[in-house]
Length: 367
Image (cartoon, rainbow, N blue to C red; front, top):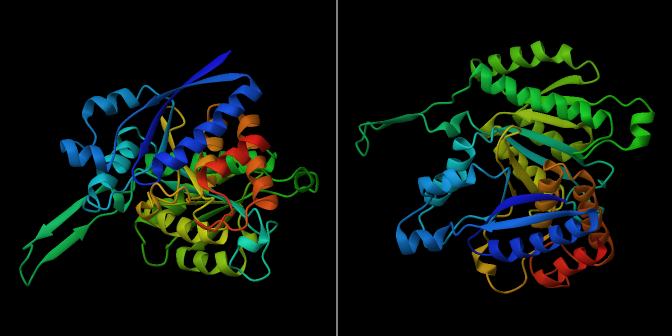
């Protein structure tokens, strides 16, 4: 029997609550599809920082590097200054473990959950591939005359050909897999049979950010001929935000830089039904990857059994798919879709008609 060792960081606020439900569902999937999971919990987050002053010890980073997959519940504590945990845990792991892809499937499961007029599940089904190790989030820059009237702040966007190429390669390969009807979020068999060609849209700002996105644009078009089934497309980031609202059905796979990816995936989460279902992965295809719900720690709901665990459960499905258990990942998503369309009143916290634990039980039973 195949066994997977997975690190677990429950984190802060409602993180441990949604993590518990995600792991519960993953265990059922393991039993159903004949593999085993060994969970390895790590106490990282706001409570540890407040008690010990430690954010992420070097020894823990070394240990986490040994796991192919890390499951993260949430990071963020109301008594800890913003940025300390986010930079010290999330960004540090993304950078030091070279999780250079942020993968965000965007799929609407039920029309009533979408705030867009006349849009249903057939209109919203795309994937955003965000470069996750470069750009403005590298932290390059500094201050001159800080605190004085003539203060200057400089923040630099770092883009390397190596970093751009490896992100584009991942995106092209994903688009090609979707063309063949394979995970993640592959095209429907009837679409493939009809000859639908996958599309990869590069999102940037070539008319203003003429250095960084000149590099992206040249690399994009240089790589394109290697993937003939994939149609190349381009959109400015501001136009992308507009088309997400007006015509989300135009998108298939999107590739973009770190900052723009961060922004457009929040908008994408809203059109797919909200943070209650939005999940993502920080991917190193050759190393250790980390999967998480997008909703954050939501500390005001801690301990109330009202937070929606479906995003966390979707993250577990993505993780199993990444580990090679594609059927388990797809079946988890199918169970989530079934429960949303037959049981859940609303995806908002406290309005589901069931508690956090009960929703986890429903998905586990459906699975």
